[in-house]
Length: 582
Image 1 (cartoon, rainbow, N blue to C red):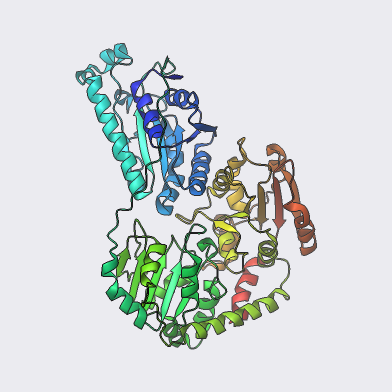
Image 2: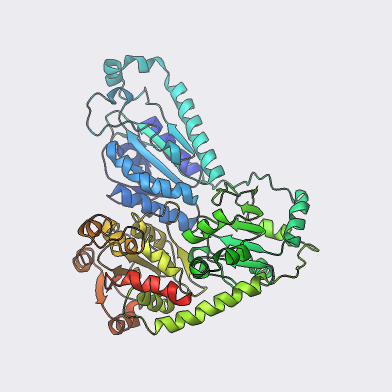
């Protein structure tokens, strides 16, 4: 087996292999040649070639999201590395482990005017677990080092090997502990392409994830008492991977008269007694003359949260003003004080916590009308929603209703950010769907790339619903050879950033349309042709229904369905929905 002749390149490869990191997403370059050669020549690794580094990093994020294990991205030196930052930030806030590996120029060539050279060390420090900035090898390119940086030769190769090994160990230890990205920066001097033959090493292993928790069951008695005596308990679940909470525990929550469970599409939790459309509860209260009274009725004695970040802005505004008596958050790693009332962080899983909370003798139910009160509100808006759907013309609102009720069961569904994920909160999804969205930073920049990466090892068909700005912004996501034939994209093209029309500041001026709504007249037909997708379009209910009849059927090519909706009425219909149910 061939490997680079440069010791630090072999050390990086060995370090990933020992920890079972198998997937390597490589963007082309010359400075990263020692690592590219070493990864691609080793049959242990599965390597992918994606030119656009920004897209490559989101592809890796999607793959790591689904595999629930680290994926590595590798790039050359210079500005290439900076293109990883959006995905690194998303992975940081979504608790997804990425191994970011960058090749670098020798330290003596930094800030002297050398090409493709920037200050790469510590570039991601605010959004990673650790920066491993390796030292340049001194038994490689000795003649160049002695001429341009002789002081580097004062350190022996053995000392450098020891240092680099320690840095790699620190990086991986912290990544596995915190479940967030790390950055490994490796300087290389030329020549870059020399190789040596080595024997293949022993079998790699995945380190066991050891939960270093301060969660002690014996200290739960006081919290059990608070829970048992509280008449208004709100459970709010953000982004949550499918099948992470036992249904038995969900049933206990769902059938407690003192509990309401707010979920979102990205929570991947389902029960008829749950409240999946948070804004449909809160928006009518905001418009009510009894606003303060109703919000105090909804205000919980105990707020229990778990999962990642929450889509609904209205629940944040509500809980920040009408703060709960206690806010407990469950997370193995960290707790955000989103509502400025966090009183306890339980470093464990939702399953572990709820099993202790509901242990024998501690799950008795208190008399309360909390659930019944708000369930009547939910049933009311559900009836009104059906009536409203019969009245509205073709629009984003009607399109999402049609789309979400017709997605076949057992699909993986990815939602782009901004309007897409927010519209999805208004309608019911089939419980068999596995729903994902980049809610860590809520950016529109990598939704398609993430979905493509997430689909690669997924047996079920992957469906992406996206808006026009998200789609065109990330069109390089289609520029790779890893898109499966069953991949499906539904593009809602409303000619711009329609969500801005419902926000303060919409004055219908040319300036607003240019700089906020960013009106555009693009369509996806030519991109579909360029990248080998089947293309179809719809611009009314009948053409949409017709297109959907065979859209999910097997095919020899992936498919794009572009749905054109009227730009100016979408915001009015959405706001009209909330008025109607109020």
